[in-house]
Length: 358
Ligand SMILES: *[C@@H]1O[C@H](CO)[C@@H](O)[C@H](O)[C@H]1NC(C)=O
Ligand SMILES: *[C@@H]1O[C@H](CO)[C@@H](O)[C@H](O)[C@H]1NC(C)=O
Image (tube, rainbow, N blue to C red; front, side):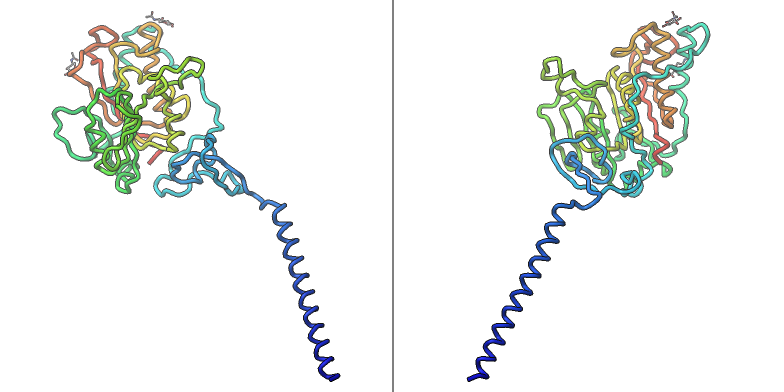
């Protein structure tokens, strides 16, 4: 009898002890949990970014948008530089904190007389002389074409430049700016060759058309300024954007080839790319230039116009863009600023390679 009572009491005692232990455990767990919640882990930053990002760590400093929230661990140094993507790491990312320039530095006059003769001679000499040799010039895209009808849009596939490696690794991106009057031979060929091709053409029927695997058409045209929000947006004007704006919106930070035929808007567009530093995001630049008149919003007398054109190209040179191909179009009127002078054509096709990007 007594033995049984002792056993029962002993059992009750053990149970109470167990309950107490459990309670203590629960309490400590709760308090640590509470502490963790009130202290956010150190070094976490909230960044808001665009969708469609290639390598997240690269775009940390971009303009915020509402669409996606990503946590980025802050690192001790600047940390968000060019990591990853192998051969791309040589590309210098535009520093968004760098102040935007407002004015182009004009080159000194070609001569004390400021004459058109001297300005034109200097300019025409520049656009007819390659600055760097290219042994593997490719016209009209990487897939062979018949050469007779098409324009000599020319890229350089020498091993010393990055483009050929980007194509091989299927990491190349082509932007093509036009006004819808051109054939698409270059674009289709680059897409078939493995590049992601974005063609900007304000004349197409819908906002975005995806053709084949790698060719996109966008109903957008490139301008040197964003539309003024104060002006009631005319429908066609709202499809006009700066290249830098499009790059940000698409989440792209580099263009391996930029091809542009902007029918005399090229001067102001080029100026905008230089002033905003967007030019540094471009690997090869293939440009058709028009010389029969000064171009949109280019003012001054003839000598000042030619000096301005020349200054733009000298800015490219300063950014280590080297001219590797020049083509004088003999099928177009042979006119220079409305005159038949200097044996010049009204139209040239020029190709540069960004030698900082090798
Ligand atoms: C053109 O204008 C500039 C000033 O803008 C002047 O210095 C130059 O002499 C003018 N050239 C000619 C040929 O009139
Ligand atoms: C004019 O340009 C054409 C084509 O570049 C060239 O063949 C010709 O020799 C030039 N004429 C003169 C007088 O320089």
